[in-house]
Image (cartoon, rainbow, N blue to C red; front, top):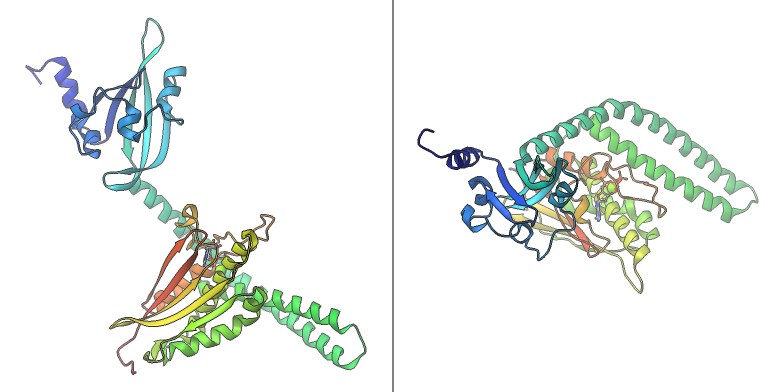
Length: 375
Ligand SMILES: Nc1ncnc2c1ncn2[C@@H]1O[C@H](COP(=O)(O)OP(=O)(O)OP(=O)(O)O)[C@@H](O)[C@H]1O
Ligand SMILES: [Mg+2]
């Protein structure tokens, strides 16, 4: 360090730091910036120094409405801000510290040091840990809950059967009784789906894989969900490739995946209908195809409400659900996609999806054709 003047020495220190640092004065002009931070913008520090911070960092013509520097200048207090920013390497989680430099004589804040730490790795690790924790909790509760639910289901079914017997024998209000039994049936179907989701998730059922035609599994899943789809007035269009080979599948589990995806699509259509003014025909297109030489694919395409940007990262998390009854009360359990993903992965396949908000969504199940598949 000998031979260097004080400024040069400080310059070397801040340039040696790999986090970003810059200084902004009370007219929002950048007065200094280290190399690491300038490198995020692909320029030399001298191309930034002397310019307004809102221009260089946010491409604005005036002070940003959420400006933290402005707050620090006003009350001389330190601040911290965790946010997602688009930087040179793509989307990053950054922790930004704002340290005011206070003039001892006037007690005014003259400049603010902005210190930017990339915490993406830590945030991702924390998210993974949270996910693992959720899975563990789910595993513990799932076995018990699904057992209770199955008992519950058995008794509801018993009541319905009795009711139907009585309806046949006596003169009663048939319409009312039928409506009642339909409602009961709907409850049973919902509970059944929940029980199976929980069971498959906690104790994946052991089922052997057998080569079966994919189209047949789709038709079976459709027959299970027909009542719900008709009730939601959804039009189903099947575009099935009849030349697909039979593939090795765990039939019940795969039916369950398709059922979940179809019910999600129907729900998305119901949500869109609720807000849509004018004529709108809710349609689900089910398409089977060879994806490549080794894989077949099933696309479930809906023209429902689509998946908003804000929830895209959460839809595969257990217990995440936006299904609601219109008054904001969540009525989904949020296990459909989690279970579907687990089952598809057990088949050495994967789930793909795309969506445009208010336009619809496409979920694709991709499955390997296996070694002994035959056309
Ligand atoms: N086709 C789709 N269109 C729009 N949003 C969807 C679609 N499929 C899934 N989603 C979103 O993903 C969330 C999670 O789906 P998932 O199937 O796991 O749970 P759920 O349908 O809410 O509840 P459950 O299936 O357990 O009854 C949904 O609440 C919804 O926000
Ligand atoms: Mg669902």
